[in-house]
Length: 307
Ligand code: LMR
Image 1 (cartoon, rainbow, N blue to C red):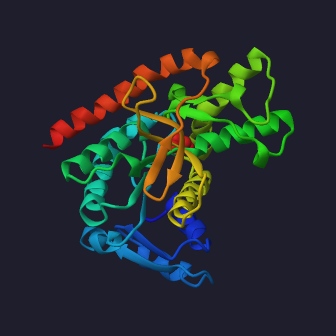
Image 2 (cartoon, rainbow, N blue to C red):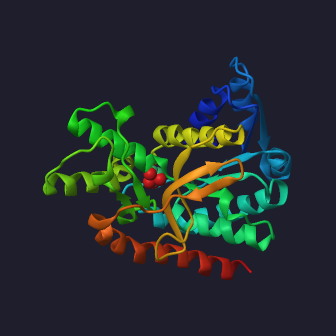
Image 3 (tube, protein in one colour):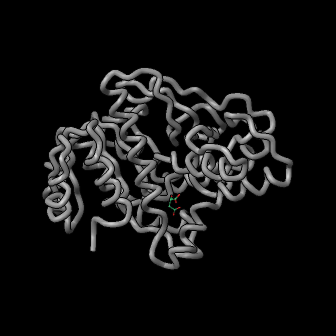
């Protein structure tokens, strides 16, 4: 069974939005069935399913935004990094197709390990001579959404009004929630701060455990990825002042890719808003950097072997 996991709920959320004009679904099976089903929803977006590599070019041509959730999910006991061997080549293949058939599109990558797949997509786009650092995003708003939800639960707040900045990467210790910069301001004793930081960093593993071999988070991932796509479409339609967090090529930390708040514009990243005041978090960043560098290095080895 294909076109499952994140893909179906994501396609439903996108089709449900009045912002979308055209939705093209790609997989190696089932996309025409899903497209037929979705196409009855009374919103403006047309929906078409494309099957197999020979239909991938037509699926991509004319797309403004591409979301890549392809790959295998984790099973209990696995880290995101354990998915590298399978997912790296899937992301490389799909990125190459995007570079050839929709080089101007915004590329949103969900496939794990995000800390390595963004560098891979970057290098593939470079190889095709169409790289634009403002348009390749490792989508990790889920870490922000989880942090907002957990803090709101702990403090009895409305989660919709809580905003915890999360920077770094998208795996374990590389996920850095800046709880003292949360709005509204929340005061937590050190023990609670440590516990909730760990809860945010390991939230995905909780879902993997709960699914007991049936995969990782799908619905919450689809929700956050749809929100990210809506932000991109909003700015392409001229909306100003839209800020999202994403793992991107960056000069904000001592490693080549890092997630920080980004001001989006119609051409992608308009301005990297940087790390901000980090004094109590220096240690967490220092801990994250070697792990991020190792994930980025894996891309270099993978690309060397691809030649
Ligand atoms: C998540 O954050 O839940 C996803 O990246 C999936 C995973 O395996 O962690």
